[in-house]
Length: 85
Image (cartoon, rainbow, N blue to C red; front, side):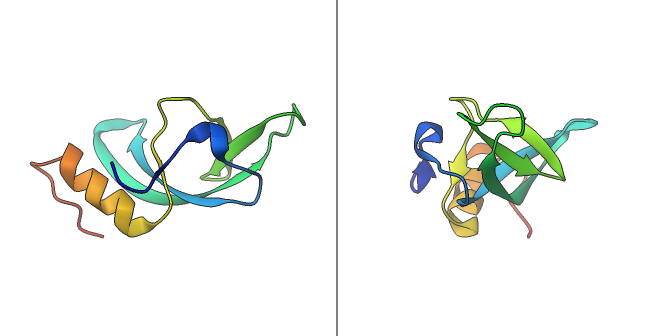
């Protein structure tokens, strides 16, 4: 997917866009802006700060450089539910 960021290359201060699944309703996904921050418990690591919560960044996470790139990926993944931002 175009404009996807390698999770290993993010730095504290980067702003990214993610496709975020609602943990309470797994069939619902949204595009959210998030920030890469210093991990609060491990200064050697960074974390994704989303919804006022720190999330560990995993290799499978899809991080995008722009909302448009995230929307394009969303539309590729969820062909039956086009993104309506």
